[in-house]
Image (tube, rainbow, N blue to C red; front, side, top):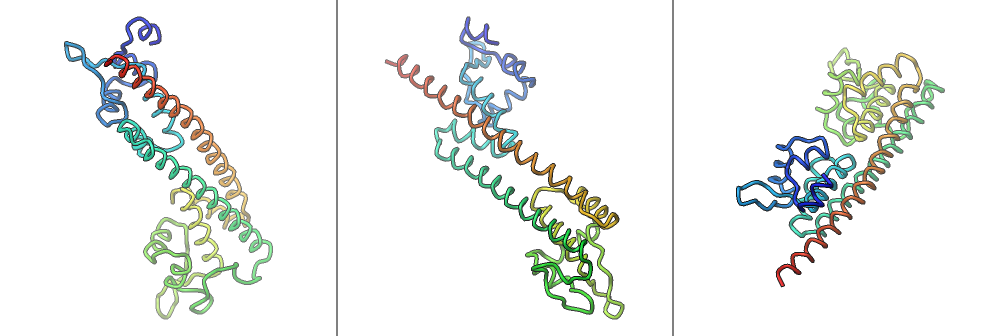
Length: 261
């Protein structure tokens, strides 16, 4: 690819595609989506890419791991439309989300400490800040959902997925959540906020209940720490490639001005 660029100044779609393990259709799709700037055309109608397009593709692919496809594509479109401030705002949003996820992780770790305390001292009373009891031996679905800031339908969904196991009041048939159910609901809520799907939360809580200890959850938290760190480092890599693309756009613009004069 480098030799092609040095000798002709032009790159074919296949040159960009091969350099990154993509298909030529993917490269064309990126251009049509505004992720790459519009390419010039040869007299025969073929696309002619340049170093600018190569830098754009590198920037986009570097942004993906840290920001996700939707945000990375929006950033690139903003840059290509000369709306750099909007692109930077979108990047700030991703960093704010990462910070929020880190705070959520801390909240989950707090919940784990609550779990450990409950296991160490069973029958010592309700967990801190748990919803007040509203029925014999526990709380009903409405107060529990309100205490967690959720809809009752969400708790019913979690029950169907195996996260919660409330008993039924024999007189009314209403769900009754005891202290352990409240604990599990709080942990599930925090893990959901941290991005864990229901199918991963259910076996974790089941193993915690069966083993009587938090080891499975501790392993999940270690994995979560690793994923957040990986996202943070990926954002650094993406920022470096985006900065290089901005520099390339500046050089390209100066060259165009020189040609026009």
